[in-house]
Length: 213
Image (cartoon, rainbow, N blue to C red):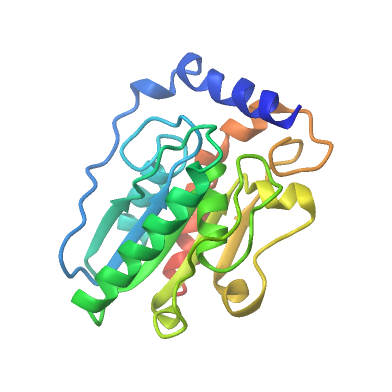
């Protein structure tokens, strides 16, 4: 049932007129002050993700002044395969580790929408196993690198439907949006369209992150 709801929600993306929006340019600059690492949702189009990643990155560029920002689109299938979220989890940790080694002063903002939130959850040590398009943890950001993560921005996070959330060392740096009725993040939710409305939270997410960098 949950997978069907996930597919139904994502099938609306093309018909909602969202694909006509212009996505900001994303680049993984060598040593920017802040690297925005974004994991898109299942089948989500866009450079970083049309519904969340792209608008959040644009909002961050406006909210965070006096610092250089780069962006990285997590390289993973973002499909319904059993290993999709695990591949994203590994890519996030590999990217953050590589950047932390190459750019010791760089900080990170992690962004995840829908399946992408599972990817980020796993990367900060909160398992998404059992959630819609979730997976067991395959890698976590090392303790030595953890202080470089300034903020974690999550949208339509499937582990919320299991009664879970980001806890521990990342909790105070995390904001987790779940729209009322969203069946992907709210147990018993029935409003499939609510899962597609997180662009409206981009400004609030950017404001939160700006207060953490």
